[in-house]
Amino acid sequence: MNEESFPLVYPHNVRNQIEKLTDVYLAPQTSQSVSEDPALLRNAEVIFSGWGGPNLNEEFLQAAPDLKAFFYAAGSMKGIVTDACWQRNITFTSAYAANAVPVAEYTLSQILFSLKYGWHSALSIKQTKLFKKPPLPPAPGALGSTIGIISLGMVGRRVCKLLENFQVKVIAYDPFISERQASSLNVELCSLEDIFRLSDVVSLHTPWLKETEGMITGAHFEMMKPYATFINTARGAVVRENELIEVLKRRSDMIAILDVTYPEPPVSDSQLYSLPNVILTPHIAGSQGNECGRMGAYMLEELERYLEGRPLKWQVTKNNFSLMA
Image (cartoon, rainbow, N blue to C red; front, side, top):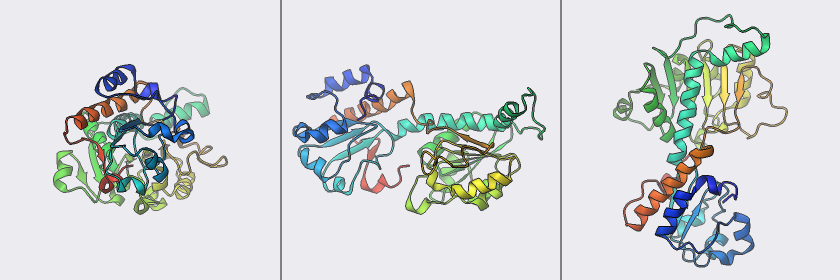
């Protein structure tokens, strides 16, 4: 994995426990060092990895004939897993659930800030140099507001749970969730159109699949309430960004908070950089700083289950691989 990420993702206490449970025969390696000397993998039965992990293609797997388990202390494995992986009887597991924690926390912070028209005020003060509320209708605040969640996967469900601490109404769109499941989350299911039409804040958590590319269109954004906010911490390709930009140019009342874009980063002349009602953050919703150690800790727990012959909690299989964001 990336050299600089290693001490963050696998802090000392986690590494010490891993070393007690396994025979660590190599110092930390990068994808490049292993590529230059594939023989390093010959005796590996278990690999711990993370950000900057290797491409698990046929060549890599042939160099590791004894590989039985791959622990990935990061989110989605889509960037490294290949079809060759499913032909080998290798156990894969990922810390995507650990990475969902800070994403949900980031989302919550932006929802609550947006309900007070926080970005409207901050941007107005910067522009006018007047320390006062902009001439807008009263901000809704949290009490009684409506939050729309698109997709109730790992992050979406966690956001719903966090919102239970506030007196807001949560509506959600997810065609794969039953009414009973939604009820357990204190969520009311509705159409995608109603999400945009009824919500004070809309938060997107849909995985990037072929079927979801461009799922959110300009027509959806046109439906949004005056001064509503759209948050995207999922993947930029789920949104037709060119259509979003056109709506934002006409609807200066709206705010778009984009932690992800497509392409990422945006091209140098993208209007996302210059539109006054767009907030860009550089994919920071996921694990940062000390939060990264949570991912290594999750993989340590998975190792303990693996060695004891218990089912893994976060195992990645061919069946659930496509659902990872």
